[in-house]
Image (cartoon, rainbow, N blue to C red; front, top):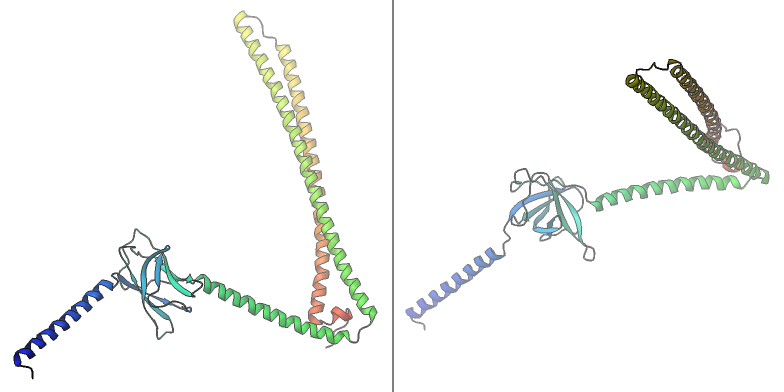
Length: 327
């Protein structure tokens, strides 16, 4: 049997071992515990692929980890994160969203962005607003597109079934009438395109004519300005001659030069009036052609509207031709 002294030594040894284990546990826990500030987010979308311990990044830089994930009573995905303040300081205005971390593993991460550096740092335990991720936006749009496509296919299927039922009792002449009607619509469309091309060509030609007349007007004004400048030089020369020699100023010669200048200015004004008349004529031609084209367009659209209303009221008319709709 062990003596009391041996029992005491064993007890001391056991207490010492327990103390070492507790101390080691506390040390290890303190070393591996991630220091930082805690924040939380709530997502309305699915966060499948996000896990506790997942990465949190700010502008592509890892700054923290996901600490806890659970579902709130309001059916929202509650995510708590730990941010290392040595790597980033969050400010008011920061937002978070889900991003793909690994396509192969199917894991997600939280991406933070935004925030005004001039504001105070975001307090710990604050809510970080979330914005819709690219994946969620794409999924919702794709779902809407698929629903619209499915509805369209159903409508086409119904119309096709109605057409198939009506085809069984048709004659060859009815189909030929329908084809003739379609050709008439196509011909009207071709005529509209042709009229539009003609309008564009005439408009282009009118613009070219306008540019030509404008250039002529500018050249004429420039020539008259040069004549006026030469006349002013003559006047200055006569004035200098009168001052230096005391001779009489040649009033008759000056009057003749002024009369010539006035005649040239009258000619310039007449040329400008002619150019303005040509411009108004070209503008009238363009307006007339445009009205004719719009009239043809209205007739074509009216034909299309009548055809659409008829097919809307009676889809079988696509095969049988236009007929009276029974009440």
